[in-house]
Length: 126
Length: 108
Image 1 (cartoon, each protein chain N blue to C red):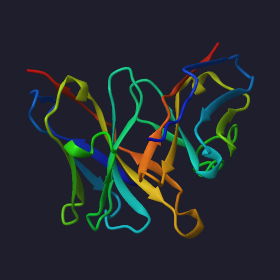
Image 2 (image 1 turned 90 degrees about the horizontal axis):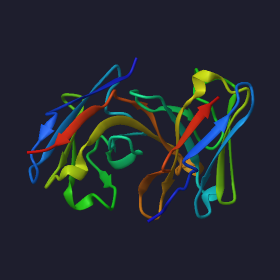
Image 3 (image 1 turned 30 degrees about the horizontal axis):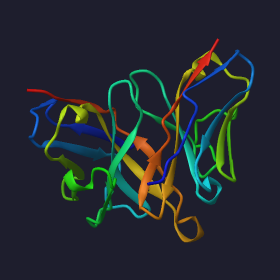
Image 4 (image 1 turned 60 degrees about the horizontal axis):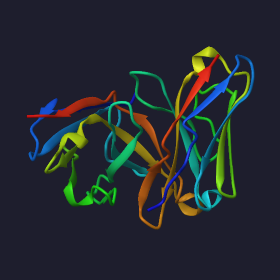
């Protein structure tokens, strides 16, 4: 079955760039009707969508993070990645990757995260 | 930016019906979904496209969406349903996935 696994450093220094990779297994990342997304959750707080990518490389980002976020995809490795620049303590969070379904036709606006990775805690601290 | 508002907490007695609301401007014109998150775990989709249940989600979970409010209803609430619940919708005007702030459901 589909599995997503986040990987990357658990500690990042302030002002540096956070980099995470999500490895997808059990299905190809080259799939119609699916985007691949990143979501984060600061300790004790709610969920925040960071951005999503289609296997072709087209992306869309949370407007509040857009200036610092880059999401890319490597179809040969069945992976997609997140880079968040100029991090501060406010970026400390559990980062999740997820498969995002989107509808077609009259259901084009149906979008939800269908499968989630287990999440990885990234702490921003010197 | 588009916002979704949820009550911070809801309490329910075992066996009773729990209702969690999610409010947003003309939310009924969009499609809402709901996630359940238990402590230390990843979120799990429990309702999508307003009122559809994914495979494996018990029938006691149901959803509706009209006007400015989407509602998650848990009938015959069980202790295992105690969790945080998040609503989410797609805002096409900003091309954004938007989450509500979350509601902590307590079964007592």
